Image 1 (cartoon, rainbow, N blue to C red):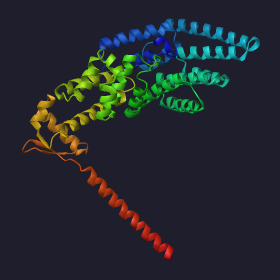
Image 2 (cartoon, rainbow, N blue to C red; image 1 turned 60 degrees about the vertical axis):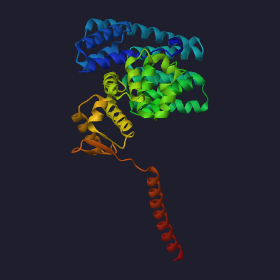
Image 3 (cartoon, rainbow, N blue to C red; image 1 turned 45 degrees about the vertical axis):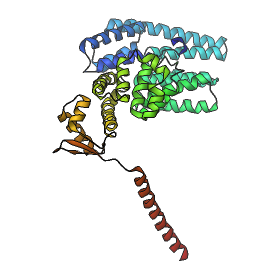
Image 4 (cartoon, rainbow, N blue to C red; image 1 turned 180 degrees about the horizontal axis):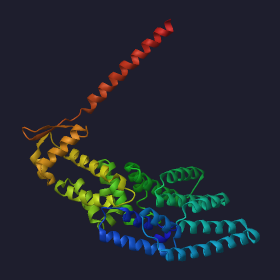
Length: 386
């Protein structure tokens, strides 16, 4: 199925390996293996520009012999493409010229020449007439944005793609854009948009140039569990046939989802710890992993508290498999921050929930807004009378 996706240029796996090499908390042996694989991939693709940039950023010693070898390969290929382009401009049609321009742009992208590839892709875009081909170039620009985590580049081209789709566009590219939009939403902590976008394409996923299907399901569950209401979570994720087909291959994700939904709180903190390690070393979600863990704790505390009018700290501690001191400290922090609607009686050692009366709150809001409207009308009538 992976051949249904667009070309894996640039190779986002290389960007992931580089990210892991920057992580001080990453296991030293795994980091060594990541660097080793990164260098193999760089040499195989002759990524001279990327290699120079990475060595400078990571303060690695440059292998000048390797760099010279890769630069020679790059120069030879660029010369071949330039000659082919010159010949096409003289002896062939516009379609052939465009194809060689695109090949040149893709090669620059493949070797990690960001500015060169962006300029070449934009020139190719200007030469392109077909809407589908224009969309594919924009998808490539978005992938370059993902490779370098250039949020401005990603955002502008997603907006451009959305505008193009208003003119038309086939079903496959519409679905592909949802995946791209969802991945960007994940990277900017918009978990709800990510969940909705991913769930819309869970049965039609073909964007293998971004990730494999198991990674896609992982992102879908991670985004859904923090953003969807319990009913939607059950219908779309817990009972989702496409997700269930893959979930048995993702034991940590499966435990995380089921421990929350089935209220197995003693397993939840273990599962959350495993999820924390997954998203901590994910280049898209890493900036938000602390936020994610904190929000999931709040969600599970609320889920337990809403079932009771009051309960003891000891009961909560036993339910989550932690100490009463830990629960006391956690609840105190969240209550003080206004994130949990409850009171803690430390003398008696229990927690009392404050259930907000939604209808009464709505009634008070209507009265307040009604009074404000009447006052404005009275002032207006006085002005008119004058």
